[in-house]
Image 1: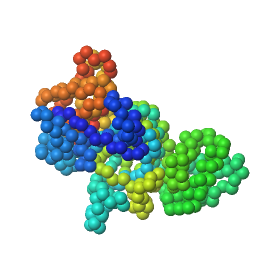
Image 2: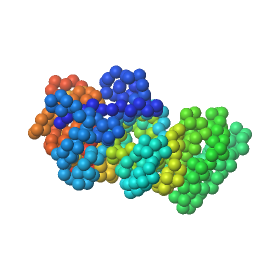
Image 3: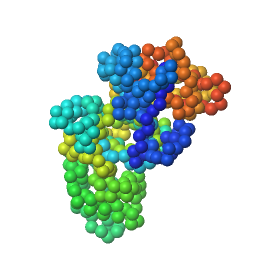
Length: 418
């Protein structure tokens, strides 16, 4: 077992207080958007060896991948940790984005390498050759956009919006009429594609229509019964005036997650996190294709090739409770699963679900990790990397504790058994 120190990313959309408050440490005074927990080469955690020396986690794993990851994991995913865990704290919306499939990532990465695109070029789409399925577990109320809603439901919102223009005695923008027509297509996927393309390629006409919509909504037009969707349009336009992502948000499911809720996001799912604190887990990749709400590069043709144009139910992820007292979140991806561990003072230990390597982070109280090969106590804010060879591991409440402990553990999904 190795105690690890993790890297904070200070993206501008990050909260200045949420991660520090969760982990019980002083605020830095800067935005703290993401804490990366894992071995991604861009920001690897740093492991402390028994002799007190430190080593980046990716370098430690490279010393003996089968020992640290298991032979099965290396055979399935190669000699690298297949997942990346983050504590994500959004005080402002993230970009509207989509992640490629594994096949798209491999082809795109090879193509950009062959074309001589620099690894850090701002117009590069593919930073690596891996896909990036992910999940988010809400630690606070968490707001997001996630996947296309059925076009018929979006048409109801747009019809309500058109009625708002009558109330303020303004003409309905032709763009809204076009969107209503597109979404009336019996082929839902084709209708969604037409509406999306109209907005992403609309240029000044989209900017003008977005300004008109925002003005109508803030002039006193009724938002109910679509308060969440239409207030999101207003708030997004305040941050990114005229951006196509403002009206694109109306095509997507608008989520309000309560603490403890979780959703998963496969390749091709258009989404944006808007506000909140959560535990995010993903395949170890940094591949993102953006579609709006950002000053960064947007490659529209590549974006359109990546999106799955079909309506989806909100992909909520319900926990599984094993006979061993484990609370497990298992999305339909091979690379990872999440375990939430809650231990009241004096509670019986909980076995750590482990398939290959594990990372653990404590967000309340303290826990004691115990295996046949060693043990480690972690206080609030502490985290650890556990080699595959450490199994089995039990998680204990610390003797004499007066506070309930809460920790999260991530391991490989497809290779695990409860």
